[in-house]
Structures are given as C-alpha cells and as structure tokens.
Image 1 (cartoon, rainbow, N blue to C red):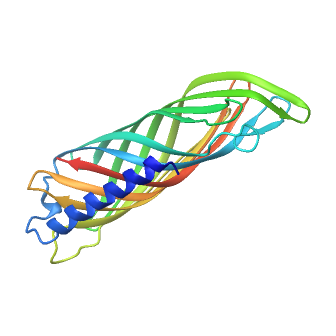
Image 2: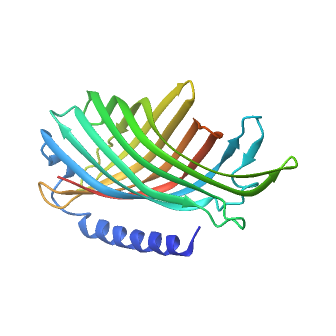
Image 3: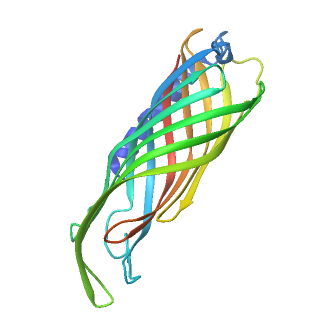
Length: 256
C-alpha cells in the first residue's frame, strides 16, 4: 500500500475516533432525522487490489500483474450522493474520476473511470430492518496500454480504450441494532448487483458497518467501513478485459 495512503488512513481514523468519543453521550438521536426528505453526500477511500487477464482473440491470456507487471494496489477515491424521497425511494450517484494501475517497467497500465447511477426501492422497512431491490447503470471507461509483453513467444504492443454502459440488478439490506443509552446509531449493510448478457458480465458486492453520529436534529455525520468486490468482464475490439477489484474501504458522509 502506498505510504501516503497509510498516513491518510491513520489521520482519518484518529479524527473519527475523537469525534465519536466527544459525541457518545449526546442526548440527540440519529433516528430523529425527518424521514420524508433526506439527502446524503460523502467520499470513500477504497484500498483496492487488482487482478485479472486480457484475453486475446486466439484465447492467449495476458495476466495484468504477472505479464504486464503493473502495480496491483491502488487507493481509489470516490464521491457519492443519495436522495431519499417519499420514504422508500432512493436515487444514487457515485463517481470514480480516475484510477490508474501502472508502475510497470515496460510502461504498461490499466486505467478505470466509473460513473454510476442507481435507484433503490426499499419495500420492507421496520425500526430495525430495511430490505429492498435496486437497479444500477454505470458508465465504465477502461483504458489499457500493453507495452512489450511477450507470452508464448509472441510480443504484444497495443492500446485499447472503450466506454460501455454497464447495467446491473440487485438487492440490499440493512440491520439497525437498537442500543439504549447512547446517541449513536450503528448499522450493518450489504448490497449485491449482477448482470450477465452477451459480451458483458459483472457482479459487485459489498458489506459494511457504519455509525450515524448526530450533530443536531437536521444534520447527521456517518462513518462507514467495509469490504467490496467488483468483477467486470468486457469484450472490446482488441481483447476481453476480465478484471477483479477488491479491498477494504472507509467512507464518511453528511446526512441532511
């Protein structure tokens, strides 16, 4: 993991723990936020690990790590917002502006940009449980540079760039344990999306644990940490990108 990523993680953990201790005995509760209209925005740090292959037309596989020699660990920054209305409907947007896996001796690299729009329908809600269905539509831009990679006696040199719309269907759920005597509201969340049709396949799941920290009756600060796995198989003009990204993440957001 890059040194700057480790430093940022330590600083954020210290800040969050300090704030949590300060607010722990507050008399304002996170679940007093009005339910008819809620907006949330924040950022995520994802400590991603890349692996996968570039499958050629003759079925030769170029391993992204072993053959291209690129660095597999990257800190991914994401920004996100959500808008809940009429209590059960949620519109979401998430943006990963630019992540490049590089540092190969031969200048090979893999770059990802990801803009994701989503809709949640929370059709089952109780004070402790939430369950619903979701649909996502991602615009994924993948750019691969292959430089002097030799596999099976053949040397590969090419660039390929492609943007595709990636749909997905899924389900999600949240458990809210009720803890008396403190102002914080912990929760456990899981989400999974899936799609497989013709030249495009993806599945994306994550699990996380979060704490809502009330600042006042209208504003709530949320801190969240978890694990995400994202698989993408995409047929392009030159090859098939068969890629996995996984790793732990931490995020923070404000709820109004």
